[in-house]
Structures are given as C-alpha cells and as structure tokens.
Image 1: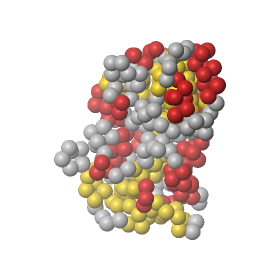
Image 2: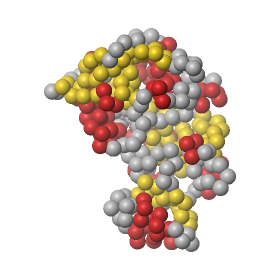
Image 3: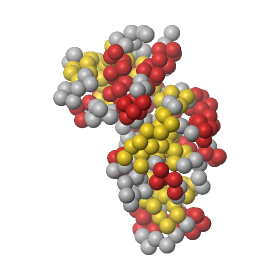
Length: 319
C-alpha cells in the first residue's frame, strides 16, 4: 500500500447517488489506503502556458446517506504533472469540451512517467464506446455505421429486426428498435441522423436482451468474475438501469471470458486500465472507457472490492 497523491476529476459530488456511484467507490478505497485526494470539477481544469493545471479541493468521503463528503480545503491551484495518479471520471456527453480536457491531461504526463492517468487521454479520444467494438468482428452482430437513409433501410430489410442508436448516447437514450414493417422507420432514421447530417449505428437485434444486458468490468484487460445483468422492464428493449431496467448478478460464462480475451491485448496496448463491456447473449455491444459503472452493485452482491483491485494495479505501476 502506497500513500499516493491522486486527483479525481468527476461531476459534482453533491449530485451523485453515492450508494451506486463507481467513482465514489474509488474515493472510499483511496481514502482507506491513505491517499491524498484532490477533488476536481471539469471547469477547474486549465492550461497555464505548457503546464496542465487545475483548481481542486482536498476532500474526505463517508459511506453515509446523510453526509457523504466534506471539503478539507478551499480550492487550491494544482500542477497536475506533480500528481501520482489522475482518475478521469467525468460522465458523458463526450463532446469537444471533453476532448479539450484530454489534451490538458496529456500535457500533464508529457515530462515523465507521472502521473498515471486512468484512462489514457489519447485512448479516451480514440475509443468511441460504440465504434470501438467494430475492431472485433467475431465479437459483434452485423453492424452498420452510416448517415445514409437508404443504407439503413437496406440493412433493416436484410436483418428484419434491428436496433438503431446514436454514437454518443448513454443510459439507453435514443435507442430504437426498428422491425422491417415499422411505419416509423423513416422518421426514426431521419431523427437520429439529423436528416442525414450525423452518423448513427444500427445492429441486428439480439433476442437474448430479455435475459439481460451484462456489464462486465475489466482491470487492465482482466475481467471481474461476475457481471451485472441489466434486464429490461416489460415491453422495453433497453436494459439500462437509467431506462427502468432491473439488475441481477451473474457469473461470467465461458463465452464472456472468450470475449474478454479477444479485446484484452488492445485494451492493454491502449492503456485503457478500467473499462466495462456490455454483452447481450454472445456479443459485445459497447466497450465503455469514459466512466464505467456497477462497482457498488457488484461489490454488494458478491462481497468484492473492485476499487481495491483497481488500486492494487495502480500501485503496481507507481514504483
């Protein structure tokens, strides 16, 4: 165990649901280990000439529903390159502001091996959570990414039952099921592509969604042995908890482990240290790299300490 100097870049802690927030689980574990914790909001980041800087507060956290944090300092000016580790846990949307922040973080590590950034800024930019799956053809169902109305119509005609979604969505928002005889197909396609001006993704529908959309967490490419299956509510095709799905814990299957083996080398190469894959049936549908969740739920179900596993890896890299 090492006394690391760390920063957590996240959304306002006052607004989180601490009992299910994965970033909060990381804060609790870091505190247990005696780390010095700087809490940084997105708008606290800035560049001063070639130095990546931030205003952040020292913070203490409590696993308590009435009061789960307190500030130990007023905002302090921090040179990010002087930290040991930075956790980039800002939730989507993944927009130009997010991309600019990854440039700041990249400058923080330009002058040496510190800090370790979870996850690597360049890889956060490179790995769109939906399109990243396209590099693993044996792990996904037939998929099309396009702006062409006719290409989407042809795909629906070929596969009969499909799911269409935006490339930058989260939490089950704007995910539509389109069957070959759906009278709303044209308006859905036009809406998601902004009348052919934006890209969207369409995939063959996976009936096994009724058994759950499994979130599998990986640390440096190694999967946690249990997943959270998010099961759609009656009449819905989305398993996302934010869309009304319910959660059940499940052990990983042989197929799940095989899927993880296929992506592990790329995750390690890109230094995507903490990731979460979404698996429906036998197929990966997304690879989450920005702010994967479900630590708290899996910890509670199986007596795990996933944040502890993550910190063990971080400490192994901070010689």
